[in-house]
Length: 136
Image 1 (cartoon, rainbow, N blue to C red):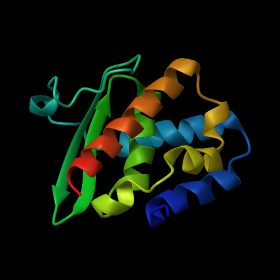
Image 2: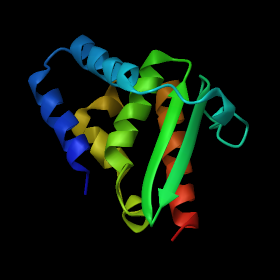
Image 3: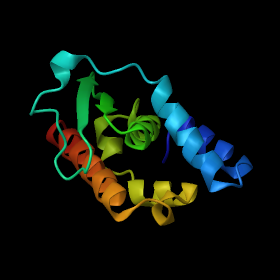
Image 4: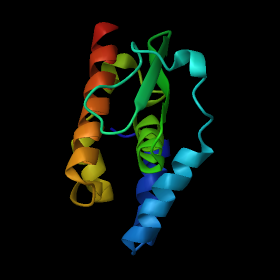
């Protein structure tokens, strides 16, 4: 149930054998995102449970979910970009059905993230699910 943008990331990962290249790819995805407006970096958009500073700003228009985000850690910013590819553009009722852990497993990221990064990723996924569920 992944978006075409996420499927593109999966395909790109298939061509990257080295984990350093995959990490660099994720970081590059984060670098391509526009920075989150400083006015949106407030307690309401901050995600608790992340070792680094993380903000997610969801926007739901006509039942379609998208979000912007930012982090002070490059790899986390890249993970936000991957999450955007996974969720943005889906209808809110589709967002809550996405098995993000299974989708990330397709990338092999589960085995290569530190425990702190995994906890932060889980916290971001939970926040996205909560926001979407509140708008169904």
